[in-house]
Length: 438
Ligand code: NAD
Image (tube, rainbow, N blue to C red):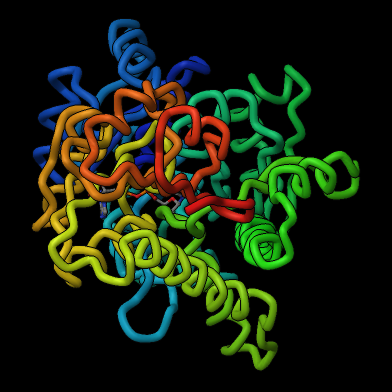
């Protein structure tokens, strides 16, 4: 099968590389020439574990190539995937579909024979029908089908998620398109991974419903964590006890500084917007969006309390700024709310992140970047763990506390315990949803 992948970001590049590893011939296209140049040199523009090796293997096998020439890639392909961004549209929370529609038009103009044009980007219900109209208008004679194929991979574990998915969702309108999609995913089908074929609207809805549900689960446990702090319960024990119930499950029950990333914030807002547009308010999702903002504000209050009520003149070390470990993605990371609040209130902030500096430098312009946690702690009044990178899970806490002007630790990922902090000589330790000491 010959595939063109339009957009080589976190989803497009991983999907393109993995499809080529299935044995398909894949051309990955991007409108950003710098990305294509890097890819042609064998460099991966994003940080995703294992991606560079898998990419090199498939380029060497002659199944994977990169190009800025969308038209040529489309002409050769039997299936064309749209994997461009759908960020939040300024002002109203709606998903910005301008990149998807622009790609659809370009594809339509370039296409000659029969193609299946597949939307992999996360798009509101009804978008695939709009894509179909756009293509029809731009190229009325074209023989084509559209398909919806939302992606569920997680950054940081993207290759495994793509190769061993919980399910693949395919929305189609014709048997012909269903057959092409079945051919593309045959290697997964043969290994018994569930392939769910639906109509277009259901496929589009599954993606938003799944992400909103996960964001709800995280936000629920974050709210329970806040109550745990008031009543003296321990959120780790509470999560464990809840998660053992098979109906609930133990995933997404870790309390922290609020969800972030490239998907949950924008997809919850887009679902809320879809609900408003259809006079069916998504009240739970709307509450989740609001509570998540409060969770981040509550983290700032915790830090302020640890700094005796003022950040002015304080030095704060921050460990981790990406929205989760094993990615360089900073989109909507809690750090983007928390760090500017500290700096704006007069703190000097030192930041350390294994992969976040490249993206983070522009987004956190007044932060000072250091190479390791020990440098972040040097003469600091407070050290904050914001992202649970493995590098921060086994710190020499004694060494850290000795370096600090005031050894105070805010562990917003609940990696350590009161005992760990006391033993290491911290005068204060605060985490999320657990008893702390000051
Ligand atoms: P991204 O911003 O990392 O990548 C998008 C890429 O598309 C960019 O490289 C951009 O230059 C390129 N592009 C835009 N318009 C183009 C055009 N007309 N022709 C060629 N290239 C074009 O975005 P992403 O994180 O990969 O997300 C893509 C979509 O997948 C979004 O809808 C997102 O919601 C969804 N999604 C993302 C994830 C994730 O973890 N990042 C997971 C599941 C679904």
